[in-house]
Amino acid sequence: MNEQLPNAESRETPKTVLDYLCNKHSTIANDYRAPDGRYSEHCGLIAIDIAKLLLAAGRQPYIAKVSEDVREGSVIRSKTLTPTIYEGRVTWGAHQVCCCNDQAFDPMLDRPIAINDYTKTIFGEDIKMEILIPHEQIEEFINR
Image 1: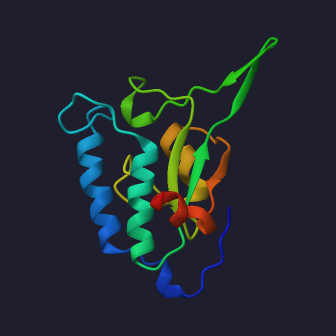
Image 2: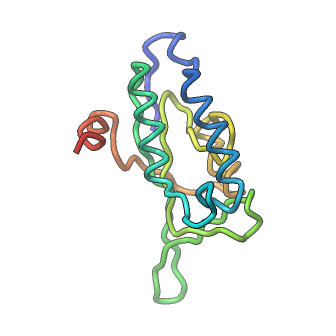
């Protein structure tokens, strides 16, 4: 999941992305609920919103999936992902996050974080990540 940076300038996160992360961070503090509290936010839609902002800034974002299978006897199931900020009140079987230039952009944090530190910081443990929508396909995916 390492991308080559074309130049040092592309390391700087666009202000639009930083603003989005900060604003969304404050709204999902309520156990990943929408601002009205009635509906759950959707990590895939958030990742796409961030990808759109990165594309508009000339970057090459992609969507990564955090998930891992665990074996319990003869049964294989998805590992339960528990974001530490929600103290066990929110769990998922998988999570999607927008990534670009070796950084993950997730409003559970109000700033970008190095991909290598992402799952340890968000979930308290290293969990497998894989590219779900590569940067070569992101525009097509968004526009469909």
